[in-house]
Image (cartoon, rainbow, N blue to C red; front, side, top):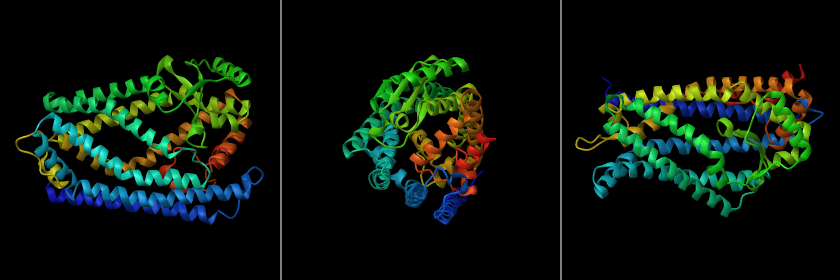
Length: 418
């Protein structure tokens, strides 16, 4: 049996280790990028100008320094909700307001989410209207930013509150295996959201127009035929309304898959380069990277729900995180929220494993693209994307190993050239 004080100490140590490790890695990245700011790497000397290289370095450094404040805020908010009694106070206030029951538990979760989101708004605003604006990437107006905030909050409420209600009901009435039924519900919910996202959720935020470029459409159709891939169509998204950053992606499930290009990407790349980028994205699909990632996610979620099922019955779990469980009312919402605060401190150490797997997937998708499109076009497209998105060409190797889901530019381009 864990002692509440020992669990408090464990929580505090994990929080401190997480914070110090993140700060150490960020400072390594800052020093490494700053020390290579004055000179373009030799491999890129002919394709990237010094001002462009320095802009990427400055952009990276600005994001990392803002990240210091974000880390500090996250740590303070986490302590505020737990050991400093914030969650307990909100819980007691809602109990006095509504009395015990499902309504109180739903309001507790909703209130927690809204307050946490509100506390993060200042940094989000600064990042959009100061940092991104400073480097020429922000295209959003304050009105659009507020509109997105309201829409995302409403969508989250419409989709999230019924799910939370169902999970809380299972915790209350699902018996000793409630966590297994809740896991099955979460899997079904995730698949459902992926299915409805292209047609119902994403159009709330962006406009999607059919691809009209005749040459690119012909290239894309031929590529799809060569690779035996089917989709629900090719679309252009008005990403330029919000940002100068660019991307291409697949969305949806089964026959509902869509190929989506940012309009900014169409302006940056020529048709042959676009074909190569799409071939890379097709590689992820044909090599089953997405189903494999989903399966791993489902398995991790299963372990997490089993752990929640056990921890929710342990008094020391609540007391050790600054909350006194109720003797005469349900504690399911408290258990769920405390679990969501504690678990990331444990799972953070697995970040390098997930990042390494993702980087391997990127290499595999590049190899697929080289077989079904022109590797030289993909190389040129990647150089343009690194340049236009101000991605640093000189990241710290350890920072890359710990965090980066994509390999450094030098490694990707070297493999494509071999």
